[in-house]
Length: 276
Image (cartoon, rainbow, N blue to C red):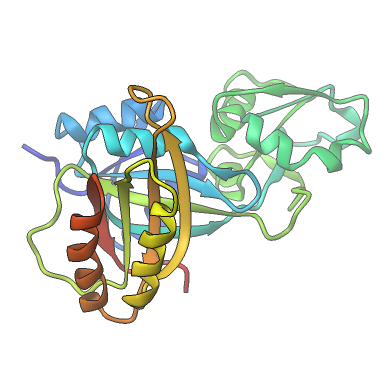
């Protein structure tokens, strides 16, 4: 039996996934912390969690392609999305200063996004960790001086760490898009103005252009297109697409046409646009 209000996240409490789960679900929830996105999917498939929060793309780093494949392979349904403004903070034990630091630990993506800040501190060694919040938790758990973590303000509050410097990311407009996934689509009819789908085409000249023209003719706005190679068929690609529209009837019309035009059409979800 599915455990209602239990939300699977990648990482631990204090991570950005945790912050999104709290922001998106405006109600009392229980958090299932997963060490990887694969474990997050397993939690949903085994009905240990009702929903999952999964990062899918970043405005700086681009698409998280393995997560597209996970959603596809496990037939998961996207029921919502959330755009989260990433603010990286430098956290350490009380009475520490930046000049005291020997190492800074964090997720590789966070380290990359703050690279320019640390160019002014060449004596600090940057060390990769599996999770931003876990890097922060390790400092307080093991009482480690001369080490800092790049993590969120939420992690600072949760693990009683001081913020040595706030907003240290190189690019201020750093937004990650998260999708809300579940095992099966909801039977409740809701209004929607965005959809995520996948299609496979014949390997013919102009086939993709024809599909895009259909979307345009049906008044769909293409906001994302991501191609992935089909491993079993070298030279063939599947296309993952996000579209927005003013009326769900526009999408339904396009869907009926695309089902005829494509070799395979798969709708991962119909939901409300979170980019407001």
